Image (tube, rainbow, N blue to C red):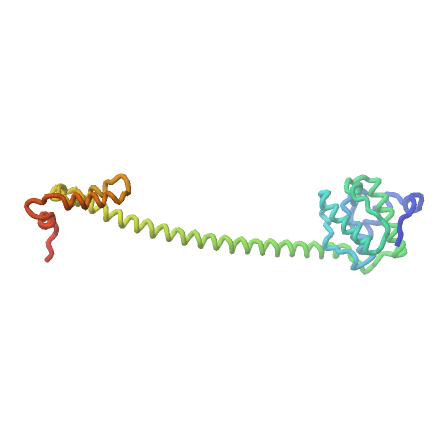
Length: 250
C-alpha cells in the first residue's frame, strides 16, 4: 500500500490542535504538545488500533525517555509498515529530537493513513488504556520473574560459597588444634630438658641441639645422634640418671 502523499495534500493542513485531539481521543492520552509524541509509542498504538494483532505491542516502551529507547519504538513501527507493505520511510533521527514540525507532519500523515483504512471511524472494541495496562503488567511480571530467578541463582551461589567457607574454617580449626598439640609436646620436652637434674646429660643436650637449630636441616639430627653416641657417660647411662627424677609407677 503506497501512502506517499504530496505536501499539498489536505492531510498536511490539519492543525496541531486537531491532531492532538485525534491522538488523545483515540488513545485516551493527555498530550498537550506535539513533541510529546516524539517517543513513537503513540504512533505504534495507533497502528495497533488500526490493525489489531499486527503490532508487537510488548516491544513498545511507553516510558521511553532516551533516544535509544525511542529508536527501538520506531524500529517496531517501521517493521509494521514493512509487514503491511506501507511505502513510508520513518525519519527517526528527526522525530526523536522532538522537533514540533517534523512530529506534526508525521502525525498528519499517520492520521491520513488511519482514516483511509477505518473511514475515520473509531474502533469501539479497542480499549487503549487496558491495552497499555496489560502490557505494563506483563512487563512487570517478566521483570519480576527475571529478578527473582537472578536472586535465586545468586542465593544458590552464595550458599555454595558459605558452605565452602565453613569447610575451610573447620580445616583451619583442626590444623590449629594439631599445631597447638605438637607445640605443647615440644614445649614440655624443652622444659624437661632444662631441669637441673637432666639439663647437662648428653641426651638433653642432643634434644636441645635439635630444638634450637635455626635451620631445618637433616644434619642436626645426625649430629645430635653422633654427639650422643660419642659421649662418655660416667656413672651410668642417661636412663639410669633420669630414673630417679621421673615419677615411679605404682
